[in-house]
Amino acid sequence: MFNSKRFTAMLAAILSACTLAAAPAAHALDDTDVPAMSYEDILRAKGIDPDNMPEEEPEDYIDPEYAEICTRFGDVNYDKVIGIADAVQLQRYLLGDLESLGNWRNADINGDGDINAADFSLLKQQIAGLRRTGGTLAVSVVDMMTGEPVPGASVSIFAVCGEYGYDLGSWTSEENQVVFFSGLPTEEDYRYIIDCSNLPEGYGNEYGNWDQQMNFSFEGKTDLAVNVRLIRQDAEPNVHVRLYDWAMDSAEADTHYLIHGLIDLRSADGTQVYGMTPHADFALPDGDYHLNIKMHECPLQLLDPESDFAAHIKEIHPDVEFTDKRNGIDFSVKDGQPDKDLTFDLSPLPGKSNSITVNCMNSNTGEPLEGVKFELIEAPETYAKKIAEWTSDATGTHNFEGLLHSDYRAAYAVRVVSVPEGFAGGYEGVTAFGYVYDYNYTMNYAFFEDTLPKTVSARCYNFEDGSQINDIDTYEIWRIYSENPVDMNLVYNNVKLGEKVSLPDGTYEACLIGRSAAQQGLSFISLAENSSGAKTAADFFDPDYYFGMTINIKFNVVNGQPDKDLVFFLKNYEPSYGTEPLTAEELAKYEAIWGSKVTFPAE
Image (tube, rainbow, N blue to C red; front, side):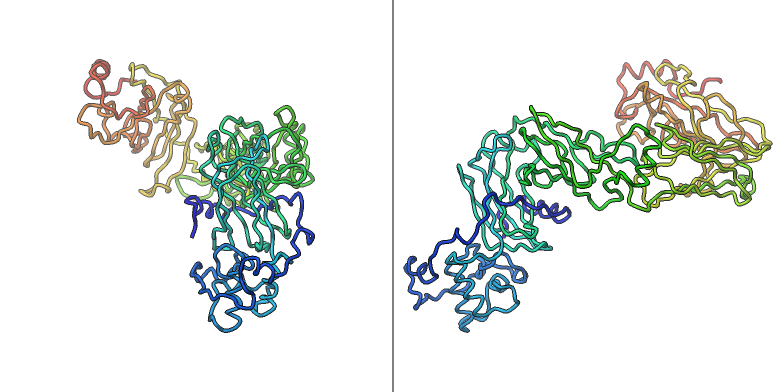
């Protein structure tokens, strides 16, 4: 049924997107545009005796399920043409010569749900040009930057109604050509797609293919004119649109693809310039334009400058000024450049906020711990504003509510300021939220009675030269309660290499953070199984000593003492993380430093 291989993918995208109204026709059709010929005159002009109509069998063009939607008013036999054959078929049906129609909805010209003589009369007038039924569409294919016609492109038009998609016709664009379609349903649940392919020389997919498609609906209008504007491969994009999420306090990274909405770009008079698109870069000639965005269903909306959230942001950024962009942005392109920043401001949905739950416990007894002092820091990696303080009570639990920042890297930091006398432990916990949408993040803090000697420490070596690099990074220690990987609590973080800490008896995992190491071009060594046969860097290490890589160590504390040395190893970064076979030169180098197996140097 579809004559474009790209239609299936397009249909899936369009059904998940939104409706875009095409521009009104520059010259709307009216009753003076139709010829004053009667239906009988047209039949005679075609060599047909209106009193002796030829018999034609209905053609099997339509899938039965499509018979329940109107594709084009008057296309009774569903052959994509409205003409005499449709009148013949409808007349035979009304006379009882046919038991069914190809598409009864197309034959219901007046839309009253009944096929009768009134519809036949209206169809005759429609064929004769004495009346119009449904919407009329005029399609042109032009160059984006010049507006000149572009001949030689293959053009197809499709319609979408609910879950059904069907093609209306195809043609090859010609010089100064305008292709008209009439009898199109204009109801809001009908959408239309124009797709261009097999583009002439100089045009192509440099911009993806959103410049070659238009997605639109009539939205109550009856006459539409759509220019499909193709972009030459040498046309440079000169307009960039951004979305700025103020809860995240960051833009949709200078990306060329917007994930939260579709752009609707028109000329100032409402003429459609681009089809609805998620792309953020555009090539536009000089002129006046209106930019709008249709947001996807997500926990974001266009910001209201008078909202409480906007006031909250102004407290954090006193110099920021918001304008209301909920109805779009008017702008001009002059000398090839936009005259203003094209950024839409986003905010959380009304009434939405996030929360953080903090639980404090005595690690030795499992009971709540009272007297731990915390502070809550918003955006710890940027403006780092302290917004709350709290001291744990007898329940050991506290909820920080009404949180409006959502940085997916570090939205909030919960810092332990002090612990009750006689206890040790604590760390800075960082939360990350993708959106502000009533999400909750729970942090569990396990403190232990500080009666044990400080016996646990770690160090780090550079595998490349054997040097100790304790200043490279910090590490963290997690207590493991069972084989369940989620049944563990962070006990310490940001522990300095060489620093001694105390731990009660139990099972733990020590993890080197590795941020500074990565900045210096160093990484861990993976202890993945070696199947190459040749020796790799991983073969220098005991795989039972480490936990998958040389920056993770699983260990036990028994009678206050760790059962193994905590020794991390780093090497020069390479994509294989040390699992590739070593060259003879590399093997000789490492064996000269470590022997056949690494033995830990004395501390």
